[in-house]
Length: 68
Figure (cartoon, rainbow, N blue to C red):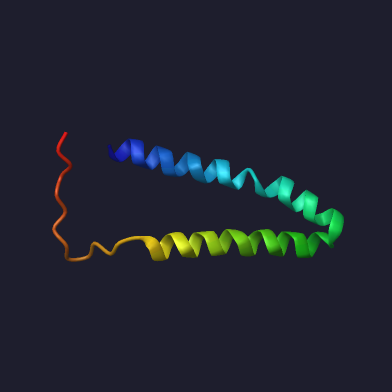
């Protein structure tokens, strides 16, 4: 289960990250390349921060094994 979860998260991140190079290209047509890169980085940081805030704190909690 742990390996499947890690693999899913890793590859989902890779797939999501693959959207940014075309996004920079599309934005660079309308605005400068520097601003396009900054906008893309800002979106990525917002996604990362929102995912981090959505996680549950497990410090001091008893972790139980999944039945299966």
